[in-house]
Image 1: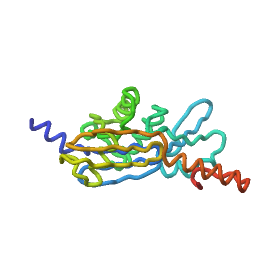
Image 2: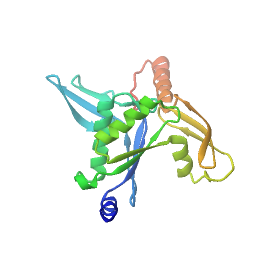
Image 3: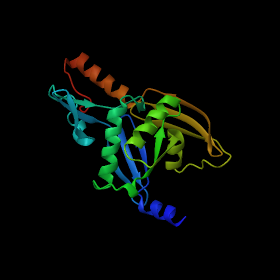
Image 4: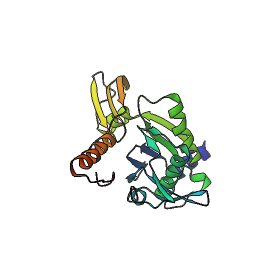
Length: 215
């Protein structure tokens, strides 16, 4: 019991909002310590791939990279599309919030938000990516519930609370009461589609190509 409490006290448990557009990391006792784009720049040299940049630095490269570098968004529609790149991104963010220092006895427990409409396969991919990135335990919470708790809504009371959470890849709509989700709908349309619409409009009206960063 003593050692269990000691290891928990020495760890830096965290919550991660793994979004299509941005990733936020909250560390217990420190608050939100990271808010960066969910983008990874991969450089390929002689068939060997390595991470060139992650987060803010990688997003600045989108639409401007040379042939050997590709800026990838490992999540689409709120779920993991490229598990290997997602794992590298999560690992980078975990190390970054720990100042680049990770020890075996400090591997954190992690809570990660998932879309309410995500499948068991999609949830397994998120859990595996976080585990492989160094989490000692991974817990999943549906995004509408996390958003409602964060907004300070009385989720445990016997009254209905409606939440609408518009993200980069998904829009979550739910009614919450008595600590659970009564009804929910996850629509795989969000801010990314708005960016695409802006890019398409600029191209059509002004014959000008712009990237997602500009949009």
